[in-house]
Length: 114
Image 1 (cartoon, rainbow, N blue to C red):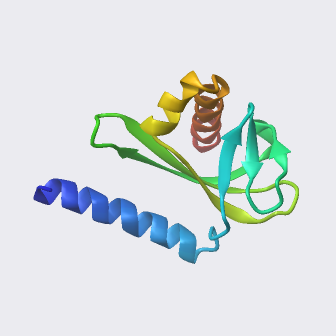
Image 2 (tube, one colour):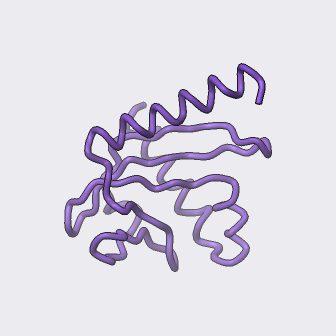
Image 3 (tube, rainbow, N blue to C red):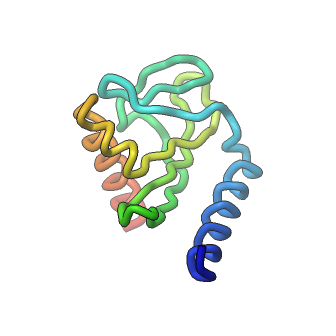
């Protein structure tokens, strides 16, 4: 790993650690069957129903872009992280809703910050 890559990895790792320390420390979230699944209470929610508090965007070794969303479940209100990287996007072949949901979340955060 070169120095720039090491610095980016440390920055990403420390940013995720800061989110964890800020209370985004549940089991987190995943995308299942066109919904966001809270891994704490097993509730499926529409992408628009989940509160997004922050988003980190990062480059990946394969040249892709990844996102980490800090969010809260609308049902149990637990805070956690949703990781969506190139491997998630490749999983879109299995579940075509994954890319759609990630894009909706990115658009929401850009709109809210805009």
